[in-house]
Image 1: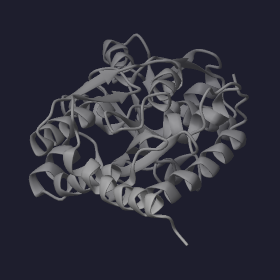
Image 2: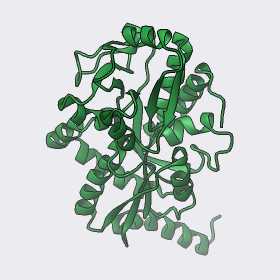
Image 3: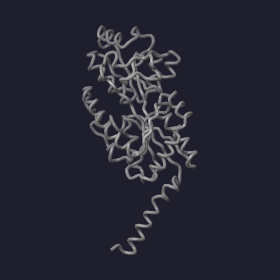
Length: 319
C-alpha cells in the first residue's frame, strides 16, 4: 500500500509538471543555430524567435555557433540544462550527417536531445557562375572530363559535401571540393567568380538567381521543385535516382520536460500554419513541414540511417 508521504509526493509531481509548462519561460531563452548569420537556418531561427517571444512573453535570443560541421553548437545544447531555456534549431548536418562524416562526434544525435518539432525542408541545387562555358549538367560533365582538375565546387553544409562526392563518384570526374563555414560566404565567392560552382540551398541562392548573378544547373530532389520548375533534377540529367533533401527542426537537451516541449511545439504549429508565414518562408527557400515531438523523433532516427548510407555510398571516409 502506498504511504501517505508517497501519495503526497506523487500528487505534487503530477501537479508540478503542467505548472512548469504554464509558467515557462522564466528567463530569456537562447536558440542556438549551427550556421552563420545570413544562412537559411539563421533566418528561420530568427523568425521563430520573434514569434515565440511574442507568444510566450519572454526574450528569445538567437546564438550562431558556426563551423566544424555544427558539432560545437550541438555539444553546447546537449550539455545545457534541460529546462527549455536553451533550444536548438538545426538540420540534418548535425543530426543525420555528422556521425558518418566525422570519426569523433562528442554527442549522440538521438540520446542527447529531445525532439520538439520538425519545421520544414531546405531544398538545394547545383549552381554555376554565369561566366562558365557550361549551361547544363551534361555540359558540365563533358567540360570536367575534357579539363580534369581545373574545376572546383564549393559547399557550406553537409548536403553539399555529400552531393559533390556522390557526383564525382557517379560521373568519374576530377573536380576539387571546396568547403566553407557557411553557404552565404561561399555564394559571395560564386557571384564574384572566385569559384565556378557551388551547391547552395534555395534560401541562399534565390536572391542571386532572381538577379541572374548565378546560373541554376540542377536541383537535388528527384522531383522538380515548384519554386524552380524549369530547373531539371540530377535524376533527370547525370545521376539517375539521386534524391537528397535537407530538413530542419527544433530540439532541446535530453530530459526536456514533455509539457514544455509540447507547449513550444504547439506555438510553432500555430506560427507555421499561418498563410503569410508560409509564403514568407517559401520565398526564403523553406518548404514548411511541421510535425510534433513523437513523429519528429521517429523521423530523425530514420534520417540518421538514410544519411549514413548515402555517405558510405558516396565513398566518403570519416575525417
